[in-house]
Structure formats: C-alpha cells, structure tokens
Image (cartoon, rainbow, N blue to C red; front, side):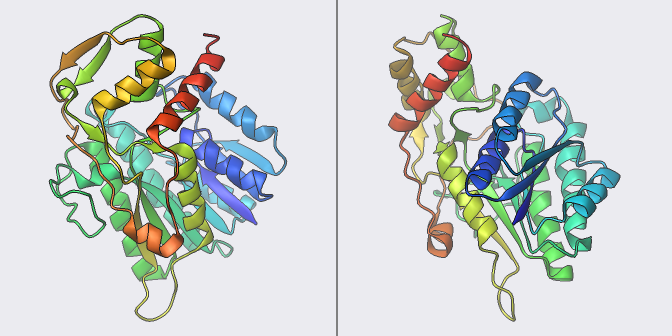
Length: 325
C-alpha cells in the first residue's frame, strides 16, 4: 500500500515513515526542508529513509496548492499521514505568518487533495495538546472544550481540526486528528527541552528553567507515538449512519512528569549536574499537560510502554553519538 507522509524529514515524520517502510509499505514523502532548525539534521533523517526500499521524497511546500495537486496525482496514495506543520509555541510570537501558511493553508491544501483524489481512503493528521490551552481539568479529555487557545500555534491546530471535521461532514472524508503530547526521543528537534538541556549540560552551560521548574509535561517517547499514528492510519473510523467519519484522539503517555524530574533524568543520563537559571512562565506556555488516552486505548489498543527512565538515556546516547561527545 502507498502512504503519503507529509513533513517526512521531521522528527515524527521520519520515524513514522521508517516504521511503514520496515513493514514493507511504499512511502511517498514531502517536506520543504525549511530552516526553522538545522537543515542538516533533516537531511540526515532523510538519509535514514532513502537507505530503505520503497521510499521517494519530494522537496516542496504544502502551502503551494499546485505542488500538492501534482503530488496526489502522481503518488496516488491510499492513505495519507499529514504531519507537516510549523511547530513551536514561542516562535509563533515572532513569525505568525509562517503558522498560517503552513498549518492552515497547508492543511487546507492536503484535505483538498484528499477530497479530489480517487485513491485515498483515509487521512490521519497531526493536531496538538496545545489546543487545550489553559484548561484546568486534568487529565485533558477529547470531550473538553477547546475554544480558548493561549498561542497562535494552538489556534492553527484547532483550526485544522475544525476544517477536517467540516470536510468529513460535507464530503464523507474519513479522517483522524491526533493531539500529540510532548514527544521526545532520538532524532528529536533542537528547539525542544531534551535537546536544549542535553546540549547545555554536556557543554557545561546553564539551562533555562521556566516557571521556576513548576511545570508538568506528558512526555511521550517517539516509538510509542508512532505506534499510535500507524494504528490510526491503519484503522479508519467506521462509515455508516450514526458513525463518525472524523475522530480526534489524545496520544500521550498518560503520566505527566515534573519538569525537575525530567531534568534530573537527563543529569543521570549525562553523568553531569545542570546549572539552572530559574525564569518566569513564558507567554503561550501552560502549566501542565496530561492526556486521557482512554478513547484511543479502547478503539485501537494504544498503550505507551516507554518510561522516562528508559527513553531519556536512549535520546542522550543518540545525541552523544551524533555530536561525537
């Protein structure tokens, strides 16, 4: 079966494509390889994929409708896993236009591509736990209200969910949105805490700890995330009267960890203590993320298996090998 994976040079995109290729699927990828973070890392990820049979990639921007139309016409995928997006909460304060182009226009182009395709059976796409905003009810449930985002990034992701829900209603398109909760692991992003903290600690530099360390995150190891992504791509929502053609799932670890415990895990994995600069909460951040995963567990059997004590050393080992530490 042919899968189209957008954002294939990204962190989750690369791991997802590799999982599919290793089980014998054909994967057609697209990525614009932008310079939000080092392009060399993205090309290294692609090298992992091009070494496997069944993979092809297009360097292009999903915000360009002509590129997307051509891709669908040539690839003729049966399943689409849409992971391309402009990530990051804080960067959305600096460059809001990038988020509208990639996350809103780009998402529209993908669902339009699916709409006009005569081969696509199902679309799974990335949303985010950020849509819950400053929701105080814990753990976050898919049934919670999500109409009060606290960042533009979150607003764009909620827009994606609403557009997809509308397209499913109007055109009967089978879709699943995935609200990711703080993904980490080898080949991760340089702008995220595991990379930032590991780099600084190994270099003997201080780390910035926001909200004075009083934060919790539902850190989820990338292999567990990929298992959920592939499961949702493999099992479209049922069609028929009374059955939803659009579902939204939380996909997290269901066990929020204190930020200070997370830092301690990196200290243990690196064998070094961190010098900490305590700072106030940053605009757009939230105090805690905590995923209720009952729905995806009941529907698809999703159950994360990787603890922080196992996942962090794997990331640190990968980081040290990549940087020759």
